Image 1 (cartoon, rainbow, N blue to C red):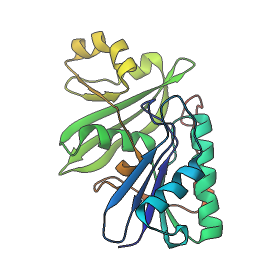
Image 2: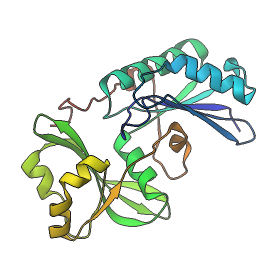
Image 3: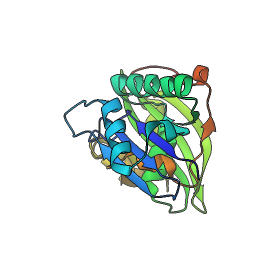
Length: 220
């Protein structure tokens, strides 16, 4: 198995500004996270992670990262770091949509026919995407979009599983009860989730690694 590094700076749940995970050749995974409330240093985090796992940085041949939507600063740093590893370290790179990552992590492999992921994009918008999980494989039903508030709320259908951070789910509580939808809190998301089977990953060249930020209207 190829030695691989996973990194994320999207901080979707607000508790891990940077997170890194190292998968060794034997499949064992070691993780490290910067503390909540501290930005930390992603390069130092990865160097210390390699040291703890007994892996030389040059042995890392694959990198996986999510590309947003998420934290502006965190995504810029993480994506720039991955581009550097790709350009100068010769690593292959796989990219993951952050909303897909959040859905897959929150569901923990449970099947669900309609999963609506929501993040507050501010400026009267929500980032949204709809997925289904069948046999632990995540499948996109509606692509990610930055949707104005009224349209976003109208997208929540009866029987949906709605994945969102705790604060947003609290705001949506009345709507979820009205639509008979189930709220599922997204929390504790770390880079190790990027290695999960059933998560849609795509090979990415440097030009494909364009971060999408929470307050951007990339899909509006």
